[in-house]
Length: 237
Image 1 (tube, one colour):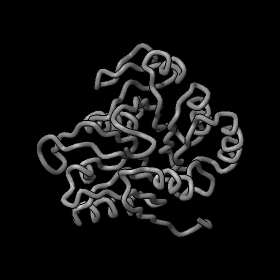
Image 2 (cartoon, rainbow, N blue to C red):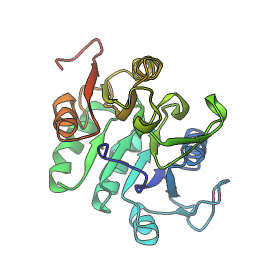
Image 3 (cartoon, one colour):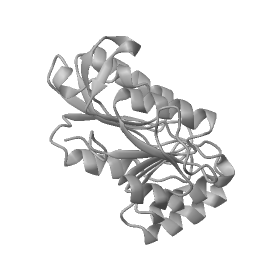
């Protein structure tokens, strides 16, 4: 079952024409994620190198594609507005990858998000979320996958779908640290386990989902046999 995202999730990239947005859109698309378009104001009507349509606003993108998730690669000064634009357009899962978003901006954004109870914010300053796909061919970074959803910057090929694991078991992973998320994924895969969903909640003091929010979802998920939690220096979590 997994949590929050799966192979049916339709994903946008806000900031798709920037170097980071373009690079990670390509990687998510290659992993098999249903990338359906991107948003860059002033560049609506164009297409990215993957053939994905670009829109001026998130609302236009949602109306045209039916997107229900987004990853944000917008510069820090505009990231908070990008989060609220996505929420107002009806986006369900918002992954803010951007690092360095001003704390005051996020305080205002957290308060404003109360008006959009349908929206779940992950981040900012996070690696994103991934529900592993089934491996259909190849190995390592050259492997081909289908049926999963990768949103953000996590390397997809190190993850293992429950059905591809040696034990037939899968764990959920929640982490404040990006690189330690990858280490936990690698080690659980090496031990013969899969991952149901991996959520990088980010290390900023003011952010969206916290440990308890994600734990509550994993507790209801039949495909999650255990949970790995990884903290980080700073904060009270």
